[in-house]
Structures are given as C-alpha cells and as structure tokens.
Amino acid sequence: MSSLITAGLSSSTAETNRHLHNLTELLSGTTRDAFGRLRVSQPNTLFESTLLHDEDEVLWDTVNDGLATITHNPDRAALEMDTTATIGSRSVRQTRRYIVYQPGKSRLDLLTGVLESSGGVAGIRSRIGVFDDETGKVNGSGGNGIFFELDGTDLYIAKRSFVTGAQVDTRIHQTDPTKSTDGVSVWSADKMDGNGNSGVNFDPSKSQIFWFDFEWLGVGTVRVGTIVDSEMITCHEFMHANVIDGGAYMSRATLPHRYEIENVSGSAVAQMIQICSTSIAEGGFNPRGKTWVQEGFNTDVDAAEEVIMCIRPDRNNPRVTINPVSVGIMSPTNPHGIIRVYISRSNGIYVGDSYSNVGDGSLAEFSETGGLGNLDSLPPIAVKMFSRELDQTFAEFQNEVLVTADIKGHVDELVVTCEIVGSANEDIYSAVQWQEWE
Image 1 (spheres, rainbow, N blue to C red):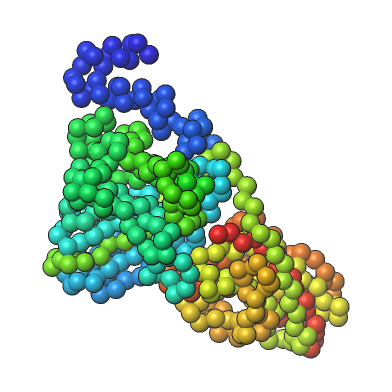
Image 2 (image 1 turned 45 degrees about the vertical axis):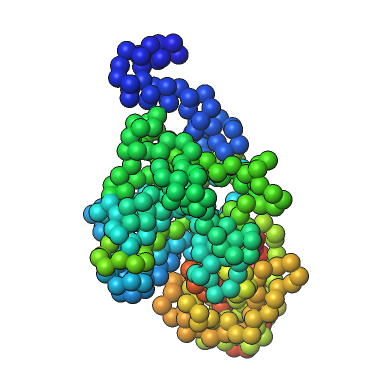
C-alpha cells in the first residue's frame, strides 16, 4: 500500500489523485455493493440485452412521436434514435419487463450508449437510466427512477419520485448548483470535469458505460456513475436513511431500463445511441413473488384450434410482471391432439374475451374464451402432442418466459390452446401456475 502512495507522489498531481482515488475505492468505494458487502465475481443476472441482429421487440418497446425514427446498425450492434427539428419529436425505448428488485439485495444496473451524438443540442433533452414515466402508462402509478440527463449541453443526474402523488424530478447538475433543482447541490463525488479524483472529463458525444446501484429498502442509498478504463467511478450518491421524513424516497425500485431523447424546444435534429444493458443482483437472488393457480376448461374442442385459457396482468396494474411457472392439462375423454402455449403482445387488441379477476390479492386476470386472430403469425413457446392419456404438467418455464406490458400499458397475454385430431367435442382442462413480481 505504501508503494502505491509513493508511486503517486513521484508523478504528476493528476496521477497522484488517480492512485489515491483507486486506494479509496479499494478500501470503501465501488469494490463494495450498495449494502457494503465486498463485490465478488459471481453476480446473478436478472436481465441482459444486446442488439446484435435487430431492435429486439421481445425485450424492448418503442414509442416514436413527431416523425422520430429508430435505425438498427448491425455492424455496431447498436440502435440509432433520431429526432427531427420539430418540437415534440421524441423517441423512447423501454424494457417491456419491470426488472424485479428484491429487498436486502444490492441491484447493479449497467447501460451503455451515447446521450447525444454531437455532444448536446440546444432544446434537446436525452436520458438514460433505470426509470419510467407517468405519461407512458394508460393506468397505474406515476414514474420513478434514476437517470443521467443531458439538457442541451448541461449534464444532470436525476432522481424521479411519485411519493407525493405527483411525478417529481430532482435534478443535480454536474458542476453548477444554480441549475440544480434545490439550487445548492452538485454531483457529490467525481464531477468528471477533469478535476475529480479520476481525472476523467465526461464527453456526452462518446459511448459511455452508465452504472446505478440500489440499496433500496425504501430508504437506502443510490450510487450513480460511469465506468472508464475498467474503473467504476462514482459521480453522485443520493442518501436517504436518517435524512428523509417518514416513508420511501420513491414508490418502487422494480423498474425498467429506459432510453429517451426529445426535442423539447429546439430547431435542430439530434441522435441518441442505445447499445447494451444488463441488471445484476448482488448478494444472491431468490425472488419470492406471490404464487397463484388458475384453472380453465373448454368442453367443446374439435379439429379447429381453440382457446382453453388466457392469463394477463390486470390492466389497472400494467407494471406487474407475471412469471409463468407451469402449465398442466388433462382430459377425461382421452382424445388425440395438440396443446400450444403462446405469448401474445397485444398492442391493445386482446385474444381473451370477458376477463375476470383471479382473486383477492392477485394482480392478474383470466379468460376461458377468445379468438385466435392475434395468434396467426406467432410461434408458440411450448407445444405438447398427446395421444389418449392426458393428465400431466407439460411445460415448466423457470423464469424464462415473462408476461409484461408495453410502454403505454397494453398488457401481454399467456394463451393456452388445444386442437383435437380425429374426434370432436372433447373436454380439455388446463391449469396455469405463476408468480407475480412488482
């Protein structure tokens, strides 16, 4: 340790600061997770996304307003999000899934991208982070989260909260307290203006690795920063324990990844670039969502494929994630046939008819009837061909299939269908088991 300090003292001031910064981080900084536990090399991946082949509509939803566009660049494994010179032009990319937070486990989110390709344009606002927006959902509570924001050429780290019943953004400016929401704060750690311990000068026109770690529990610390040359640099910390009045600092920590760029008041085009993102649980992960089972049946199944049951999130709670565990089927009439399971991403047009609440405490709905129009072009996620004997669990998903919603709150459906071969008017029963995460 002494040799490290000696090496720093014999070099330039900037190099000395870097050595001392690395020593500080080793002892108490980003080598430890949000709960102070030493970071190890076996994180539990909750979510991952790379854009190698396309915009990945399975994991992400897109909203383009005012002639904004997205263009996939396969050579760079990235997505270019372009806004026009018209005020109100906006492009938003958000994970369909609200990535579950488990209390007591540090959550680390890493997102890569470019805030604005030219380094900032007057009247253009861009954001990258772990957050949502109250205007994005048809139903449900308002927005929460943490994000980097480039407003023109001004750089902020912001905390969004709905704890007052209204969406409020607390923006902390990089170096100018007069531009911060409270008029006095700036980034509390490395300001990345070239004068901090890292010596790094943040360039919003360059590809960046943004990181966020949550010690939520309603009142924990949030750390925000970037990674440069394999070094995690802390830019700002939001402290809450023993600071805020009663209650949580934001309504939820189960949140999506989100990229957005908008022409708020400008007269020029602008571009954001989305690259890659992941969410990691540190200190183990064992989500304990509420478990539910719903039965469905159809007593008149024949050679035409028919709906047996549909499950979806309650449309009044579009932020809930349904994690299917298993699908079971049986028939007392011993027919031949095919059972299929689909995920239908509805865009507001649903397969199921006459949905009913599953029960008190559940945030899901079910239907035992419906049309197949939305399923024509969809591949099933599970198929079972059966002959006579039919009384079994035939699909177990193990967190691999999730029923979610798009940005506007149009929810997905899990659909179980059956097609009978060689007979008609058969009785088919199904049971779906799932967990609900929120």
